[in-house]
Amino acid sequence: MDALEYLNTIVEPTIAEFEKEPTCRRRAFLACLVTFHTVDYLAPKKSTELRDRLCKQSQEFLLIDRVAHAFKHVESGHSKSPTKPPLLVSEIGSRPPARLGQMKLGVSRLGDVIGGVATASGRGKDLLPTVRIAAAFLREKAMESPQK
Image (cartoon, rainbow, N blue to C red):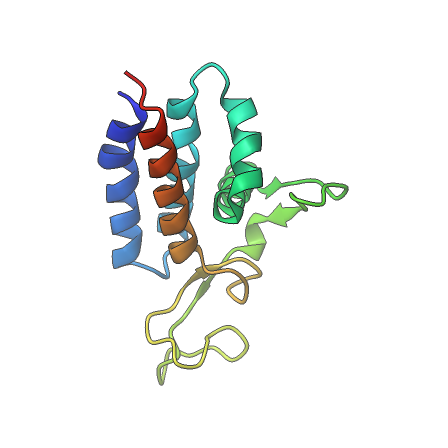
């Protein structure tokens, strides 16, 4: 399986499932995890080097890297890293929509009728648009140098 096939058969369907349940932390984790691992299909023998380059090129890829590793290892990052500060899995939360009976003060965003999963326990960066942008970025990379 090459990177484009991986994106088509694994990443895109997983993101589509997250889109159907945008407040589901499990779907967010899976979408970030499979999207992040596209790097292994882009450079099977040099994925660590490529990962570092991609993190510098895309803030969205950097964030899904951090989120995927936070869910997998409970915490990701390092206190001395300017680009990958610590991120705890407990800091990634579901954000309910701003609807009567569902809205949560300090977490829901006014005007948001869908909700989502975001860093900072729902108050930070929303993961669904982030993972979509990261997947598109990785697709561009796969198109530039497709693996055969």
